[in-house]
Image 1 (cartoon, rainbow, N blue to C red):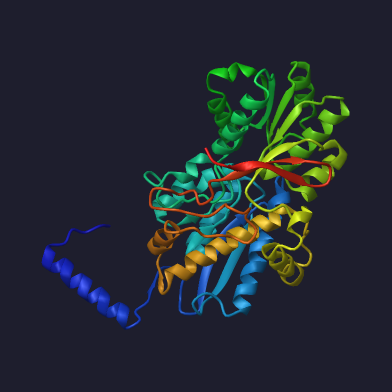
Image 2 (cartoon, rainbow, N blue to C red):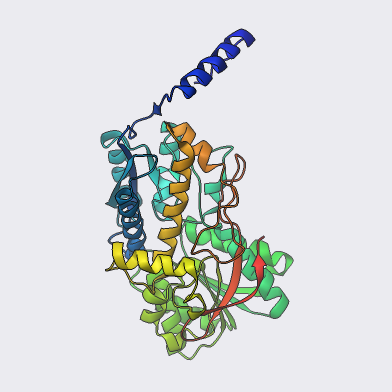
Length: 401
């Protein structure tokens, strides 16, 4: 609740704040204390998006490392990460438990557009930060209407808009077939693609959706091939992306294929699909691909590799999701450092919206994190890349919408 002060009262408050700040006064909301910062999270450790579960494990391992080094401003981080199976009703149940029973300071990196959509209004009504959500849906960057929710990665509409612009330059006569997940996640990507095509949207000759409960997307891929499409957009989560790549190859369909960024893991997507079947895929990247030998002597990569070997040895060092989790965890540590001894929910959001030119070791060169009170998307840039059968090969300049 905001209160209006007269000038004399305001000056008195400023004087008091300065005095208490000088004396080292601390401010805490639930979940914070002199010893601990308690954070909540949901992850799909089971279910159709379980390939992403390794992100939560990476983040937990990173916080273990930070704690071993003394924590942040003398406080240890306690991450409570619960399995929601990528099921929105279960997400609601788990997040209510985290907020109302566990009394966490905030929710960090809960994964998936449908799960986060289910808790979006609840967390904002409770004024609990929904911080650095692990999805690029455009709605996570709406501080005017949802001031307690912030994204992290580039938004899906920007990504597919970039693909559209590239296609218009390189294949203006393309006939496009689109496979997308039938929820806010897939529809966000699809909207960005259509917006990017503009008055050439008729280049899309067929769209095929799937449900996360579907066993396969084989029939959708066959239908898209039959449409005469010579360009294929795969806007899918890892399990279904791997199926789509493999099925297109197996039926002899060889379109120019774009694969959305959230499914570019060589370990969890391209290996299951077949590396030879993935040759030529085009995507957009903002992080270093761990399978790319050009980073072998890069300090940021070497530091990440050393972290993985010591703190998450069971994690796959070919899985780009583990590099992603590492980067988001580092971003949160920067926010908590900036918070100092003011560990209120309001200050957590204030500091998250005050990141300036933050460079992450596993981000591509030239890509920096910046936020402001009106900009809730920390990462906003990409580079295009093409898979050569072994690794993603970057091409072109740093791009943004």
